[in-house]
Length: 183
Image (tube, rainbow, N blue to C red):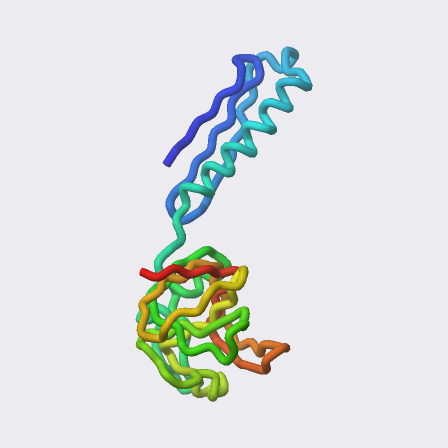
């Protein structure tokens, strides 16, 4: 995708180049007559740059990630993260799965599972962590759904062993600032 926004002839132009991986480049091209460049022109360019960057982010959809794509292989030290999971870390993703029964109704997190689950998946350490669950930390409270309902979660992907200081739960893969919808 290539979006071009232009200021006046003397002010130059702003060019935003974005692909669907979320990478955005902003280029400000100055006009030939820089002596005509005024404070008003710089304010217009700054405002246009902000609008253009926001538009670029709106076009970048969350990258899909499936449970099968999370791990590359199981080595002697346990699960090894896939290249795709490593590349998506820190980026907005979307995943489909099922909500494991929460420990309490007001929890700010839940466990996303590949298959419907009736028991607590947190009864493990990271050494025997199941390869088909992800901990989801919600950006705001939402009503929990039945464990047999398929949901789609969007949020920022994290990976690596981490212990929640409030609950003591250990996780290998997390989605933060998340929200979900019934799919």
